[in-house]
Amino acid sequence: MRTITAQILLINRSARLQDLTDEVLLHLRGDPRLGRRRSPFHAVHRAVAGLGFANPPPIPTRGSPMPVEGAPVDWMAWVDRWFATSTLTPRVRREYRSILAKTGRWLTAEQPNIATPADWTRETCAAWVARVTRIGIGDYAQRRVGLVGRVGRRLAPTSMASYISATRTLLRDCQEWGWCIRRFDPATALATPRSVRAMLGPKPRVIADDTWAKILWAGLNLEADDLAGAGIRAYPLELVRALTLTWLFAGQRSDEIMRLRVGCIRWQQSVGTDPATPVCLLDIPVHKTGTAFTKPVDPLLGCSIEAWQAVRPAQPPMIDRKTGEATDLLFACRGIPVARTYINATIIPMLCHKAGVSQNDVRGRITSHRARATIASQLYNAKEPMTLFELQAWLGHRSPETTQHYAQITPNTGSWPILMIGFGPVSPPRSDTSGGDVDWSSSSVEG
Image (tube, rainbow, N blue to C red; front, top):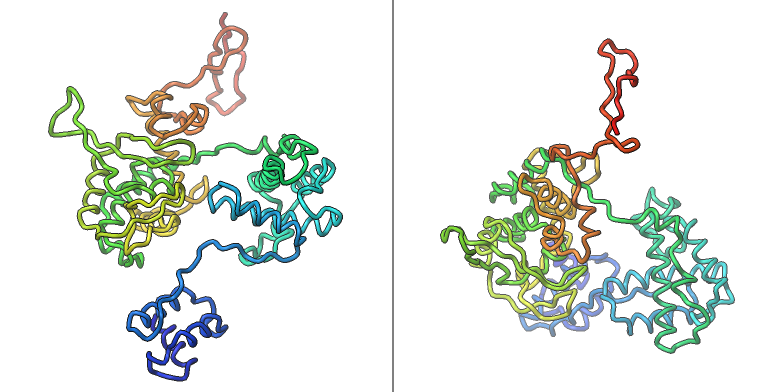
């Protein structure tokens, strides 16, 4: 703020705030000497308006479409019309629009006779699917900022599926809405190839027990000095502690954690239990695969959330980015929701530093979703484990097939499948203690 204020006054060649009129601020907003410091400039504009020297700044529009270059004008006109009509979430529509812009650049380079979705044929679909399977990172991209060292690498299978799905969705919607004649079925002509589908699927990466125990200890013993050491001064300690314990104990996705509502904790007395220890219930909002539901959680989580609610200042209702309704978001400060990346970018590095563990292990980087897989695996392999259907309800999955990917058997469960040959179990072979070869002749086959 200090730097941007000094730059604004120097560019305006006046040290008086009253000289920052509406015309001057409008001119400075696009001045290249200020670089990309749009957020602090907006704050200075608000401060000048609060002093009565200018009118309030316009509310910034987030997620406005970026002008597309290199794609046919008619193609992007159809894409923008679809963007304004589709009922998908704004984030998905922006991602699809970016992919469809790359599709338009491919049309310009290899299919110049195809200008709109109405011109597509089965041959065009086959050519696009084949091109996607061989496309590289950075191909048909308008900007390559942040792709240093990755340009030319093959796309991940999930990205290939997204490229095909975006094009399939556009053509399907244009046909279903009557914008063009239905000449083929996009679901068949733009089906994801079997070779790509074989590489798709959930891949839960459980955190090792010793590492997870240290991270739990760090979260339970979080102090104000830990926030200062990590450079976290934007949020109160109660908010950071409640958010940390929610990630450690709730077993939910980061988007669902950030969209929790004020009053999401309830206490219920169960029949036959000690009245002094009621059950803590957590209300989960509408999520990725289903509607809102309630689940039991550790009382420590409930106490930390209530501690934050006790000191949480009054704030205006905020828009739920998934449902579009105005609601009182739990994790918000100064009228702004906590960013979705806050857990991965701030909380996890802070906990790993306090616990003395690396942010990366043999399975990759420790992320917010890995806690969900770790908790699910521990609940399934506990001494009194949850059944598959109980775990499905606790995680909020729509199908038990999804839960099976999280219910991974660990060596300490004591129940491993026995190798079967024919109709009987095979006893393990006896190895030569002197270091020779394994003696398979001693193996017995029963049955």
